[in-house]
Image (cartoon, rainbow, N blue to C red):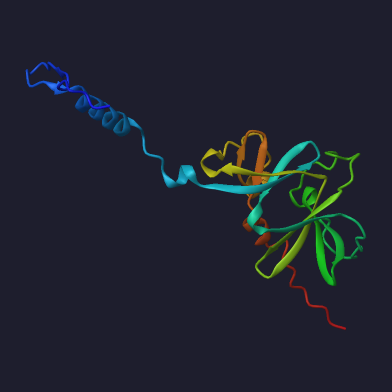
Length: 191
């Protein structure tokens, strides 16, 4: 409905006068300018797969996780580091199974009465590895800006591989783990 009355003019301190409509526009512009812009870093999110090792919650970024399988039929390998549980046959491909608890050098009494039930298959740098974990919790999105590096109180081994922590979830840096020299075996056996 169009009003036949002229717009209401308000007096200003300088006497120029501002119309109601202009005042609304100016207020909305001022409110928009007062809002701090959101940076792209604050908007950046990533999906993570969260899991249990003992009672502690950890996560890997989803982008390197190929699949999650029940942990069974592991063939032991003699002469390997303690963190290598063995190998498994994954649809005709041999995959090394790594005990994440051993690799991170966690207290071995953690989760002592629990057996690892799941394997998280990771593929990176032409390497496929299965990390043995106690159980899978969920797949969720987290804000990268909300990750903090306040890992005081944690041992240096966990801090070394941590990307950050959010609430009670330690997000591990798979790239650091997968490029660790401990995982790369270049021993040559001569017969």
